[in-house]
Length: 283
Image 1 (tube, helix red, strand yellow):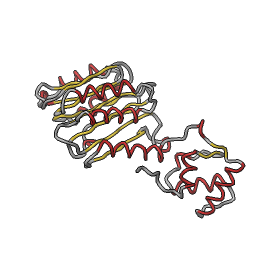
Image 2 (cartoon, rainbow, N blue to C red):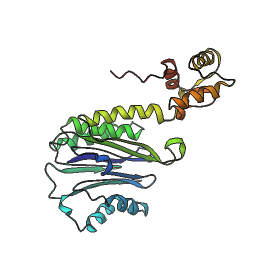
Image 3 (cartoon, one colour):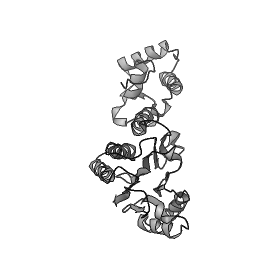
Image 4 (tube, rainbow, N blue to C red):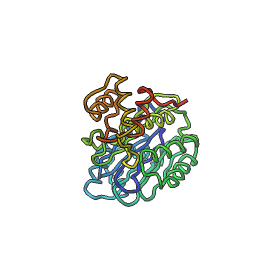
């Protein structure tokens, strides 16, 4: 009843899960991840205890393959209906599909990823997800690579019963809000007619509001740019003796505080300031 991918970034710093299902709030049940440890997806007749158990095993250095074996061996429930995918900080991911999972059911795994699904439109769902994942090796942001793989599975037919929910969970050490959390992205679409598309839209908003700016794109707050920023801040009621403080005050109200860098301005922040804080047109 679900298709998912668990994976780590090419540089090994991020770990995450993307999942979609004809199931209310799949993001509340399927994924779990811990920075510098691993990620896990439990589905079909999901055993939610797999989540802390898998992370505990991975945290002691157990491989993904051995972790999956241990989860299945220690499960006194309907193992034939279980499905799970695991990835650690190094080596291959691992996936398991019980022989009694509703067809089509199966998975694929390789270096740094595991893909699995049950009650799917066919094997092309997993195959297309794998192809999309492998084709995205140049994508440095794990959250986008995961969603691209999920969209490939959705386009291939996904859950044969239809669509309802989707979720994304990505962790990386110190990369959460304000640098005080390891949760880089935690987005859920619990009940929607096109949840994977909606998840991709939310990820774009998450990038705007919560990703840190690319240092190479920052514009110095000098000359004409400084004058423009000062004028626009004054129009918005945020004039002050210090330009950096005025910009930071405005940005805090607009939820753009993660993109503020003293002495410079992020082009995305400048675009928002010029638009009066309106969200980008996505029509």
